[in-house]
Length: 412
Ligand code: HEM
Image 1: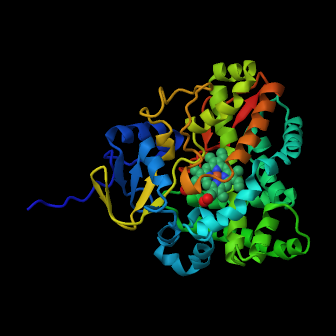
Image 2: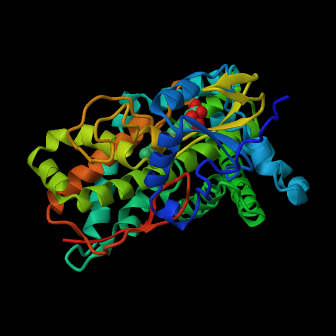
Image 3: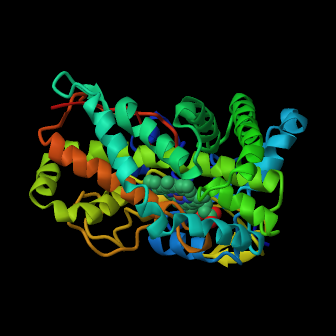
């Protein structure tokens, strides 16, 4: 009789998530990829299957029938002591379309897609250009400045405020609420304190939109909140929690990630002056270079799915309900997909980028983010061609999912 062996708690025989991983996760991803395509790890959400290769990450993200996006339950409620107190958080959080499967997902996504069409986004270009110029006018580049504080943090929150037609002056609250949600989502095992703070902030976001809704019903426009309200009136979006959850999620998803594309992207370019100079000589490379920056240091490092029915993958038995973690950032450095994956190549072509996800839940804000980033990097390259890094070591925030910098000191 052969014994059934429990999978090892850590695939590399040592903890995966430590200070070194938080500063530079790529050596760990490389070791995991070399060790195999799938590993069990106790460190992610109390136990999950990690997928390391591009082909598998893409296949799972595209297989909405086999892998469910509904995954917030165990995640929020793993803190037994606080289950009662977190129930209202879980109820709202689980309604955001990121965590909803078809047919509800298809219905909600259908309503919001129209708000992210290119012709709609193009209308915001002049206002975004103006804000970027104003934020850059305010820095003393010769003395040196913190790019995160001066531009990467405030800008994306302001742009989401434009799309939702809410006062940009409230951006301080939006950023603080989003930081609490990001700390919770980004913790492989969230602490009770992180869960409590995320609850308080999500409920505050929801209350913010709850007081806005009657005014907006009275005077609707073309913004995303008005679109949701029109869909509610037509019966395409549920009133109350379903509507409020989409508003809160849009506000959150729209800037944490863009902030980190701007910060990680500038850090990578300035750390490799040849790339920075090449973009000055060949600005037409910029749109492709943005995709390369997203590949090279993905602002979203991994996501999650739940197994819908028992299956065997690469010889491992996955059970219904098991959590699967597609490691997007590992897939982006898979040598089977990209030649010299650890090299930043601003002229790289070839597609396959997984930083925005893939399949039904592929990022709805991808075009918006690329548009914003093109404006920001275009202006930096023109206005501050001699920009350089001040700190020898980047100040990574340490968030495992939302990889980004807490500060980026630069000078001209
Ligand atoms: C660099 C910037 C961004 C990155 C790297 C990024 C990344 C992602 C990824 C990986 C997903 C899929 C997650 C999954 O399948 O589990 C996603 C979905 C999503 N993103 Fe983004 N995102 C960015 C910017 C934005 C912006 C600007 C918005 C603006 C509203 C946004 C809103 C969303 C929403 C609502 C979803 C859920 C879509 C759905 O479930 O159908 N994101 N994003």
